[in-house]
Length: 433
Picture 1: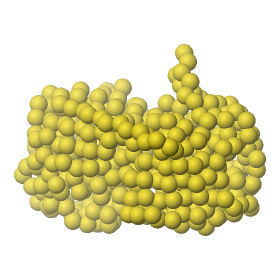
Picture 2: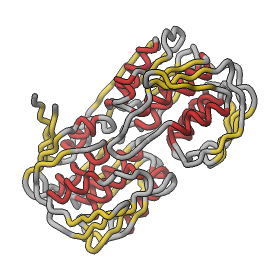
Picture 3: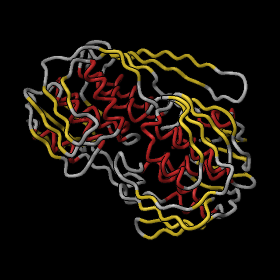
Picture 4: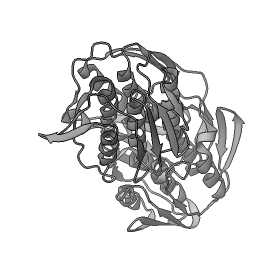
């Protein structure tokens, strides 16, 4: 087990290089199952969810070759990592995602569509509960059934079968990112045309569509709510670079604001962050676009309160809600945060209250009054983004903050303590039994 120990109160200064997007890399890794040829992916982040997916693919019989070059620069610049993965699914021996893998990372269910499309069968363990709310795969199954697959439950496994998928018009009852990605991959090898209505528009969906197009898929409308896929008989290998992680970038923007620091973000995509940038400017941060892939953010003046409501892209991302909550504990006035995506995503609020935050949770809303002087305390992370919010709170707090269960943050942030150390944070990772 690991914990973070943070000595807060230091304005962060310097340059941070943003890693590849974990949520884009996961479906792109699953897409390798659609072809027997090598798929080369660059800018893969070194995070736990990626390691889990690689383990799953190897369990299926996929050959994985990895290489990584890590460089550091003098001065206040964080580590930059370039990771390359070559995957080849020409000797797939299993079509089963067992419970021990699915329970640690729900995105493992992304192999369901590709396996059915190429091999006509799949066995994926039914996902269990999640600390931030239910994430059922019913929309995946409903859509795949419209493409011609049949399903039954067997000892906790979702067992699917399809002689050949056929194109269909599929309407998602609610917007689902992984459901859109799963059906998008399946439709690439289906006979005829598939229309995905009320599809997710996230940049990660667009990135997957970009890879699939390079592999020979015929896709139109990715990035809109209606995606059209004309199935092809076979896909081939491709070389693709994963987009930057917009949530990691947003987290470091919040770090600049909460510490009254001055940070430059490199290798990011400002266009993917527009709603976050707009909201952070509204509360008083200064953010300027330096180039097409870099931003500068600083906050030397008092922040002011502002409300948010989480929504699907291009709305304010639920994955930035916890970080925003930490940030507005330092803002003058009352901020109302309405969580509209997940029903139980305020577990971090109680931990921030232990640090002196004035937060009241009322159903799907959290009311944050500030500014308050946070003080270091022992806190426990409940999920990935909660971990990030507690790190932010610790960076702003007086005294020492100890964060337990930081394995959550390792699921989605690459070497976050090293990146923070390079820009002046006093943070340590301590391992213990």
